[in-house]
Image (cartoon, rainbow, N blue to C red; front, side, top):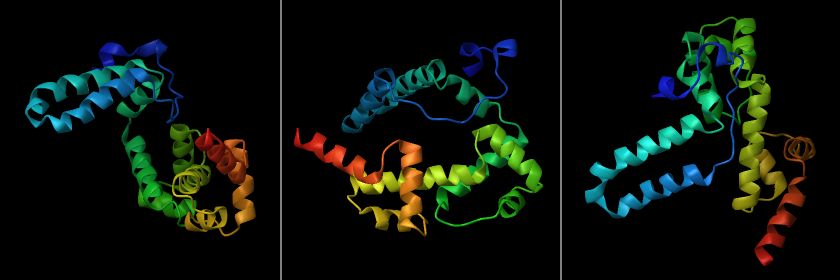
Length: 187
């Protein structure tokens, strides 16, 4: 399906990065319909394949289409890097050395670093930092955890370092994010 919808050949940008984007109403609508099928078990076998097909179509024609094509066309090294990305997602609080990650996928450290950056657009350490900050933000905003506790729980040793990196990534300090959320809740 991807090859029938997405451009290939000269239109394919070989330097694409794994990324994220906004969830649009075009993708939310079929996702909601799919979830509503949980209340209609008899309709699941008939409707879920159709809704899933619509979701695939929306993903493959949306802003993330190029990234999805890149992932779909991963070579052996891409799959190995993807396995390290999974490992990082499960172990983002742990410290690591590039050599350790490279050995997980039987690559040299320089080759691993190059392929990781090529696929994600950032170094493994930057990727881990992004995972940590995103999880800490979730803990602060939705679990109402204080900043220092959130920082420690995701692997930071210094709340002040955490706050600096949080502001650099999200444009606001954790405290400013909390105040904004409270203001929005009061309105």
